[in-house]
Image (tube, rainbow, N blue to C red; front, side, top):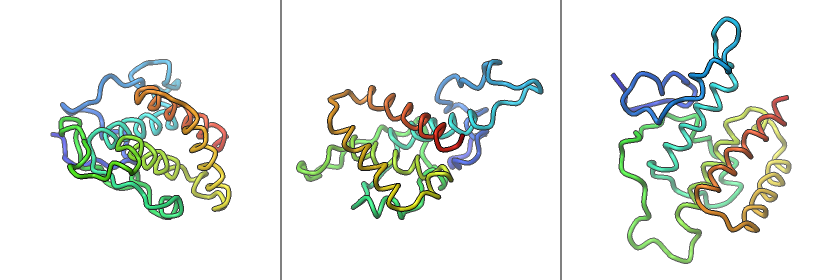
Length: 168
């Protein structure tokens, strides 16, 4: 039976339950080693992607007050995730200030920062390097007019590139 709480560090938490997000790329033989084990990095990235999708679409996420606050806070991906794919899709609360950052963009940025913090190599960077990384990301994001779906793809590939660069 599926538990209502999942932890980001348990890749098996997305198997054997009715709320599965869809077929996993881990089911393919091309990602398995000779002894039929799945590549651990691929498994971890798939779990992070599934958790990102779940948190982005369903969880209540308060935007960070500042970049310093975001970098100092623990990653949401290191905490239990208590939402399911069957929960209602997140929506702005009535009366939210319309002059603030758009609802979906603030969620994406908060989760992207948390995603990066889930990698030890990012957490071990000096604070100034973390700030520079995020300033470059925000400048790049502001110069592109893209759809929500394109932004999700952009973030996914940016994280894969980031993971490859810092973990190799």
